[in-house]
Length: 298
Figure 1 (cartoon, helix red, strand yellow):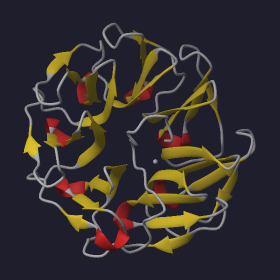
Figure 2 (tube, helix red, strand yellow):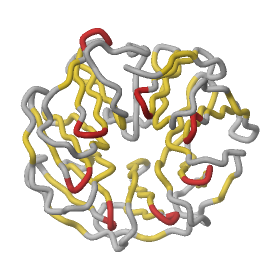
Figure 3 (cartoon, helix red, strand yellow):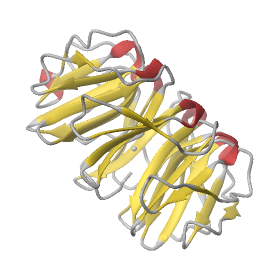
Figure 4 (spheres, helix red, strand yellow):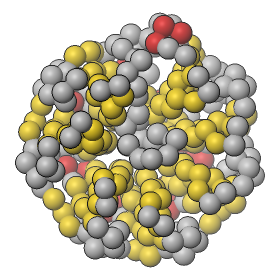
């Protein structure tokens, strides 16, 4: 579940303190997880928020919403969660969550902190910003397409989304549309060394050295790609129907047996172990990216 060199871990990220069972929790699907202030915070469907210092102490917290939650961030002593229908929740302590007025009813999928402000992006090209996480203002991106993920690296913002959308900006104020060469929805954007990689529907992967000129790459995936990570000299891609693919050079790819048909929405590396997480409470682990163990329920 990315990943990128910021404290926020977007599109689903999990660490090795989790195994196939988390005491006291149900099997709601998770979309993202973050470690901060000595706790793991997992968010997902139906307003699910799970908090605990380890796998045996994860407990549900009352989020006050039934909306699906998509992204979480900890910055300036505050936790911020965004989700469906313009949902924004903030908390100073993970116990009390307060709904904030986002000024939009569009779902919010991506959240980051850069340049002294919080930025959230989502449906209908929505972008909102805030200096404190509580008072938000609408901004213009110049698109009506859904924005699924945004990355800031090497002095530029790159946003990706529906219908192959790619936008770039140096200040998150003026945005320029780039040609991705695909009409598939792009769900995530990552950077590996000096190369940007966007991925998403129909197994689509497009790469770029400068964020402007993009080239489509066929890795042999047919289902939607939801997340990718690079660790231990290996790329690991996860996606629909339990898909896992690996490569040591980003040129030649191998399909791996995940042991599940559930969609995998995030993958990361922690303590030399790959961990993937997805629908139906699936959590699987691998030391080499090829042999995976685990199952449903957390």
